[in-house]
Length: 335
Figure: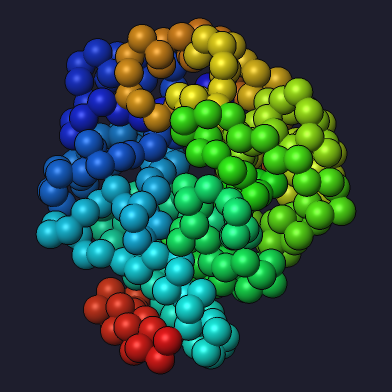
């Protein structure tokens, strides 16, 4: 197995992809809108990926946050509210907001599980900043660390109840960034005491099964390298100060915040301390370059992967999707 999470080009595996993926044996896969056409197609694709991997628990990831980030789209799949809806309800009734977030996450999980998807890149634990870039914005659960942590924990619990692993992101915090890391490299100049605010939700949820790094430079910790490429940020802040010991994945290697070749990016995030590197585009030439730059997954990373997937092993809560969505909607009506 290689320490890679890879995207696919379309709604079904091509023969070239099938040969490549069989030879590379990536740790898992990630799906996007181009891969999600209808229910039968998507389930056939995820079944194919499991058969190819020879692992029933192979991680199949998606970004299904709700709001403006949703890979599975209406009218085939139902819409879900974004994080801002739960933030607004928290102003009125914190306990109701937490329960609504949990029910919503479990409803998302029920939809994903039906499609054969077992990992959702959710929740965001980024603390919203008034001057931060809108790439986070209404995707955040709020501007208060305790609120973000409480709602984030409810999401992880709801996903787990539905048989789906949650991924906290973007560690150690993207909320202060004044730029979109998809487009350019954000640099955060806040000092270390100020950054404690950003770390607080991640510390509260340090037992999360998986986390995704931020392609953001924090000058207080490492002025030369973004978190995904910084041994100091990963070792001293994420593994040390935060205390996270789950599976750590990079954000997408294809984002413009990173420089250098795809081989250099993949080797760099793994050398910095990420357990696995995430590559999303499904471009074969890029994937071949990434695969050529990595060796076999390390024993510690494999153990973290297995431990994360084991958190959803066994029976899932049988509450119907419609009941979960109705409960969420009734609670959100109070906002």
